[in-house]
Image 1 (spheres, rainbow, N blue to C red):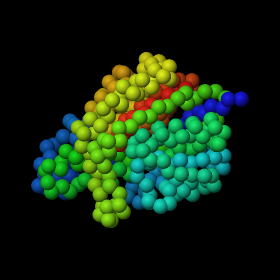
Image 2: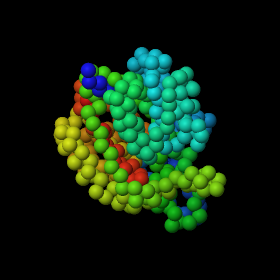
Image 3: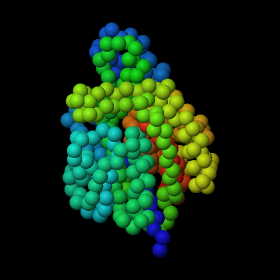
Length: 331
């Protein structure tokens, strides 16, 4: 019997904390009085209204565990039935051990675990890995988790106005945790995935490791123009991958794309040939929640009835590095 993998459910944990765009700008002006920042610039440039902010005491593992507990409750899944846990967040509780161990401990799991990281495409790559493991017979039930506390990387203090453009994206991030359950089944679920990379573009968006930088805390630095340029040729490869998978954009019942800003969301829609009106907009009221962005769209679609069992779903990721990918599944 041929074994397939299916995404059973997706949940998110959205922190109760909120920070309005006006509050973000006011805090930046207080911390960087020598750097001029016009009022409303984050709304105009990125489309941000407010962002989600986790409690100061909560770590990425806490947010991921919150989302996983909700998933277990929604699906009636016994945590003891999970065969593998993957953690795909950019941010982690610590460098060693893998944050997946911390998440598993908080959930009371005894299965194998490991971290998987590829900037904002981490969750899509984790789905690719889960699909391969399940189809090979290695595991039957894989829990994919992620979380970000990116607001803690906001650059509040600048001395040089020339650094402003590379610091502004850090003020539009949001905090969140997510979980997806992928199971073996007889019905085709994940129909295929393809990933591509322009690794020469890695310098466009960086968050240095403090240990590798001689314990000097690094800053999130994003050159937006350079980042867009780093995707050269990748949109065409993603469209070609869809043709290989036998899927056209018009066939999709739900389209999820990475949303680091409203303008970039529209760019990605153009790249993959999708009307922006078909996208569930999450950025304006949450910020750039990085690896949580696509799980958030799935969860919103499920909660609103927009996503039904049997629907054809396309998930498109464009992340720093640069990498691009698509995962197509029958829900």
